[in-house]
Image 1: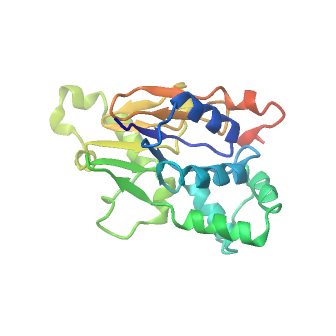
Image 2: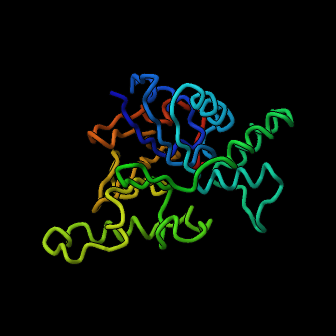
Length: 241
């Protein structure tokens, strides 16, 4: 039977992504759901996007847009918001894009533009980069949600409480069977693996910093990880730069 794999933040770490995909031993009918933040961090942001574009020709792929992808799309189109900084690995991303032709840059911009803000599958599982305060699909998607951490913070706060007081289970979480996010590195909480709080699964395991790129099969709960990204890019600092 075909399998589904959810993949967390990559942040320009092509070597880690390729290693992870090899470990998944993919079949052609498998589905890949990427949770966003493909760029900004390590030096292979352009190569990551090129690789994802190629993957979409072989597998069923869902690409969720993250805040770093939203920034890169805006930069490629020359429409950056005022006071946009060059921190968080963006200089490396810009340098790599400057090596592309105008046609190639346009192809990448179109790929970013086609990304989804969120995805809900036939099992009522939501896949979104960061979070939401209004149920996705009920109102136009607010780009501020690419950076929202309140959903994850609420799930963490309520996780132990709902075990003994199920009536306290947040209604905003009950709208979906399960919710899969990235954006907030689990390393912040001293965890190197994906985390679960209430029905929310966080797959950002700190690839941009001192962690790994992670994948999960949402049907079985099995997890795969790359090696430490900093060991694959020993002469770089990622977003620590």
